[in-house]
Length: 429
Image (tube, rainbow, N blue to C red; front, side):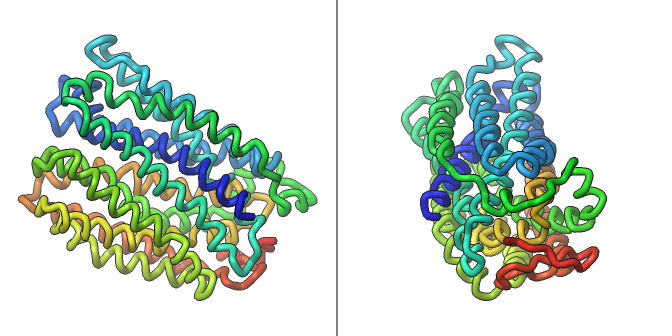
């Protein structure tokens, strides 16, 4: 079980490294390189627009790879999604700038970002289900939290490489070729991840299914549409908070506040370290007290902390920004440490890979794709403190709070999962 959890964590970390390195590059350099005819703010918005395309592609990837996962098994999903994400990410590092090939540059960037999103959309469902369906019921949240640590590790890897390059290269060197290095490294990381995942066993719960869904997505839409919408709305706040901290604030701090990118990266990375370390701790609480209570607490804290976070960010002081980021990410991890156990428990096994992954990644469209764009636009109309961004984050948190309130509890009861539309019990296995 430990090897399986570690392998899921490693693969998820690699895929999220691929995804996050693009977000960091979008905040720092992609605007001037690929949208040079735009103003600084408009260029950042355009770069964040290509960033958002990855989130739009993720539910499509969930449907595509979810079909494979529900029909052919969870294990093939892990290999195919990692391969697609790794190749497309390495290719981003080879795209010429606007000054070299003109409008073809942002078009290529957009297409590769879309492929990144497709791959990552399949990754989460496969990695989480393979771990959750092997885990003992009483420790399902704990073991399922290992893939949830992967995003923190991937973020630290991506930003650690960016930080090292930013600190050692001049601005012209970084803009010319330095930003490309983390993308090229994705190819090597993907090869390592494929080697690790090649030895993983198939989910025993999948092997026990007597009749597989013919078209899993159609069955999910027909019978579980309300559940999908509720889970998407519930998870939106997690994405909004995470990308407000890790992507929007990076651009805001460097462009609006004049803080060096090195200082901003260090502050954000330190907060992500705390978030990663707390993930298994919160998951243990989820195994003891249930999934839904932690999610409700996380939403409430997110709503309350949104205004202090933007106020602390606006100071431009490293320690205060770190405190603001850490508070937001602790609220985030209170929810997301348990959703890897919670979502699979809500869906019946025959459509679990599709249903859980589509709901999870639709939340990313609402919370992740829009947040950097909306926050950048709102911040232009505020003074020193971007109160509009705080109000936006609080509003998303209240939306998610309402959705979680409508979802049933599933744990720590060992086998039952309840679909809220029909009330029928679903065996988690």
